[in-house]
Length: 337
Image 1 (cartoon, rainbow, N blue to C red):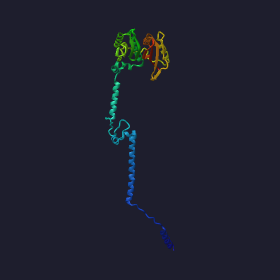
Image 2 (tube, rainbow, N blue to C red):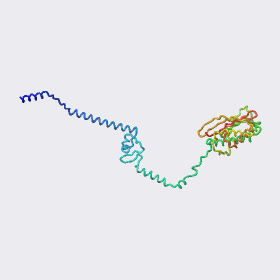
Image 3 (cartoon, one colour):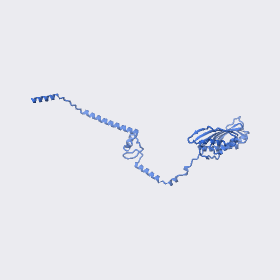
Image 4 (cartoon, rainbow, N blue to C red):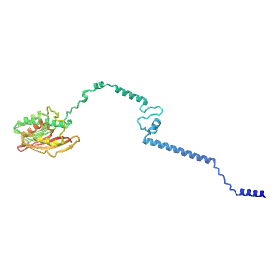
């Protein structure tokens, strides 16, 4: 009875069990999956390499890698090292040629050679001419205060010539002078002989002398000439080699007015100058007007020439105004900022 029950129980167990089917992959399919995994790894590695080299092309090779990567590889890829010296990890040779040790040895030898040079040998090599200032020969090369001294010499000599070389039978309507030595003269003589004599004297003291063609209906005593006057013994050394202080400009101009010894000239135009600021100094330009007879104007110019005043006359225009002379002077003043 017991045996029968055991046999029935066993049969029920076997019949009720569910058998799960076993799926076995084919060998070809497994190999394909394995290849895909390897291809993914290779593509990722290649992408990483390309991105790395692209970054080095754009941003440069990191310093730690410069001594590791061969120069040939960098040059093949078109990558320039960040430093000036690219070193081959195998040969340790610089792009300029020669090893680093050899270059360092040369630098140390040069340093020792410089240290061994004695002071006496250095002094013997220094020539005094090395420190000589270049001489300025042209008016345009002069410094501002030197130009003022040149103006004094040039205009003073021109006015002195007009005063001494002009006879009483010659009168002027215009006398113009502009630095460095240009002039224009217009007047009339009482007789042709006086005209020719004056023009010949003016020719002898001129570098470039010209007279315009005289019209047919012009009188034979007409005087018109222009050119450049010869200058002698022009000294541009400055008595005071500094610009005028800004708060002393008015005082300098008041002293200029006192150069009229007669006290009869009417002087104006010493206010509201045109100002140019050059940073290290200011250039003040005045249009001064003075009215008086010729002797007064001439005495004023000669007193200005002999004075230490730091006021230049760049241009002077003298015109006849009735019995007097109307003079317009373009003054240059250089002041500290």
